[in-house]
Length: 496
Ligand code: GLN
Image (cartoon, rainbow, N blue to C red; front, side, top):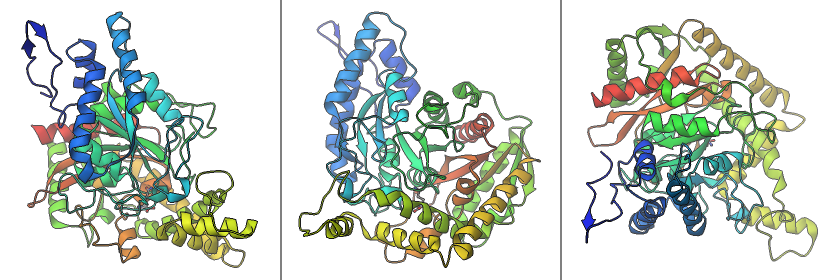
């Protein structure tokens, strides 16, 4: 149960004190709707907890106290008036700082955007608020979402609340850490090559990567446009499903947002898994997979079998090309997307520049961090006239093969179950000197990103030293329903 018993004082019901660490979205909303706590009090309790804990964790970059309290008051007024309340009524959320928020500084974790106050809200943010969510603030992340540890943020790293000497994962490290630490009930992150699934696994929360096109990218600061996706973090599969449903669906502001029907995702999570065919890709269980993660995934598979699923070996033969393919394509797109930061239109402008050209140069030199520069260089190189065919075009061809692997595997199974990461959360500083080691962290996540299918990470136990382990569930294009059903099945078996 996520809250303690109601407290009576002088015969008056005082605002109920919630136990924020384990409070689910469903519990939070019903407490607000039933008047056991006001949305304002719930927001304030979260701000108090942030003040207490986030100095050390550093998951929030900006708090939006005024905006949060104004929204919470609106929800409370609607509740008092007996109006119908939205599916996220009064639910405190945090937003990764790559999603624009009207009038609220949005940095993408970069110095080059410091002081940038966007004039509009990202569609995902606007839809959350329209459903009653209370936005507490903006969450720390790797610069322009490039990273696997949150150590590339220009504003300093985030700590993993489950082990403070370890990284929370990246790039949506702040989004995962804030939910894990009880600083907000749910959050939004983005995933280009694993940035929702990997931090969710490292911090022991649920993270969902929707199918490419399922959620509008309007207002998402672009890293690699053909890969970038917005998705939720939450403490339960049902909660994540509820947030996804609110955000999903077509958007006239993003031509790539699909008109495909959006199901009642939360209801899907209650359906059970009996009769589902689960694929197990042999390529994901090779050398380099941590023994305790392997054992945890095997337990998950046994559990699914006992719940009535059948297990089937599948093959994704091009898996070993996924990391290099991803790092060619993602950097190519990044080099193009990041050309817009020139000191003229957004955020930072270098102060010591004599000419226009040196203003561009100095702004980019001062504003971008080392990893972002490395990727702009790599991306420019693979797109250059002499190397385009050898790298960029070749990578596009391999991307098609990776997508075909999944289509063929899914001809035979309803969902695929695999590890999310080769290791549990590593120590801060452990991999920063070796970019290649860091890129290999993404080995189990980038294939689904390149293919465009949906995926999620569900907590499935801990290592012997108490570090969270996540299991990845992959689904067919626009079949979030089945993926969420399997995710919920895994979660039930954990509890049972
Ligand atoms: N770790 C991957 C990268 O650094 C993925 C990042 C992401 O998904 N945004 O590019």
